[in-house]
Image 1 (tube, rainbow over the protein chains, first blue to last red):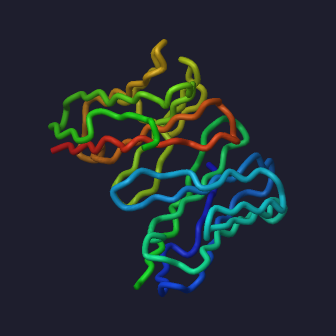
Image 2 (cartoon, helix red, strand yellow):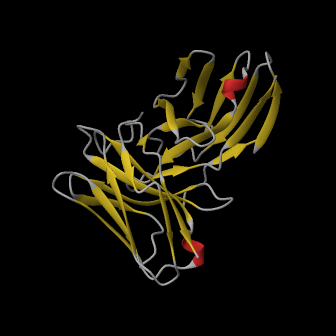
Length: 112
Length: 114
């Protein structure tokens, strides 16, 4: 069973502030690391798929970095807005098969 | 809209019954994944199909089965339902069976077992 851990479990951010949170994964046999955003009453939506050590991806005010050697990825939200309120999930594919295991998520609440 | 269609949206049934959840993947996608989200739990992988063949299996109960048909739609069958099977069931699709392909999720089927 793969351990994909996300921290913190939740965080509250003031509108306009920036924030970041972590996804930790096994550093051996790395294939890819996925990030998804899951808004309330909607379905998860892919943000990034990261494959290379040192990879940085950006989508608007959201960006992510990847360190495969130490087994972590950071997701950053710059200048948080209320519409950024969501649960952010990371997912890691198993080295043995195609199973994509999800972390429990970090729930971000942006206060106006 | 992800292009992945799941039906029905809601399902209420009694313990011991059997239900079928249906998923139509995005046009052109060959791979279908099923996930379960129970109360206070994250997304739990159930099973994956690629072009009609089972590719990966998670902690799927023996009472659950799935298949992917030649037209690529998939069905998840849940039988001898128990209260604990109440959950949100998601289907997701990708073009390939590849670690690099992001999943495109449907809106889910909410199953309530009473």
